[in-house]
Image 1 (cartoon, rainbow, N blue to C red):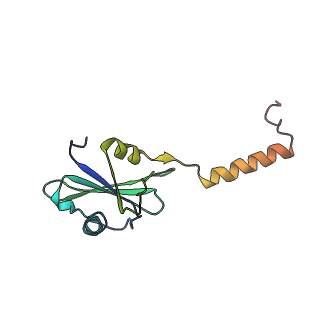
Image 2: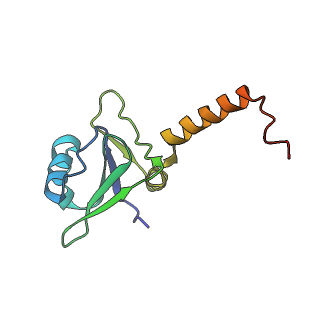
Image 3: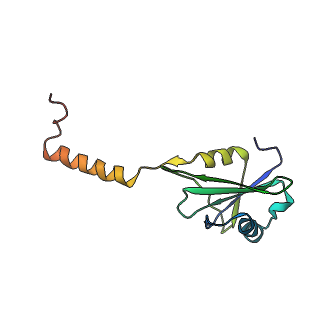
Length: 130
């Protein structure tokens, strides 16, 4: 549960997911204009492929990172308007973002195409006959 009054910033540009605490804090200062050590805010960073996300925050004694990687889904990262470097969201939008959305794997698409081709070549009724 995220306490009331906590601001949540999503960095609009992809960030290198190899970045750790200090580099992400620097990115927050430079791109978003807020210092994570000041507290009261969560900073969300996504990788280029949108399959990995890091959330950075200061909990009173030090910085914390939540790092999440999706397997067969992607994060729907909001896009900044008017070239904005960040988007501000609420706790429910963060929950939705962290859930991710399913994506079809490339392997499945290829198999589906192969199945359709086979169905056409043999009349498609090979499954109904016993």
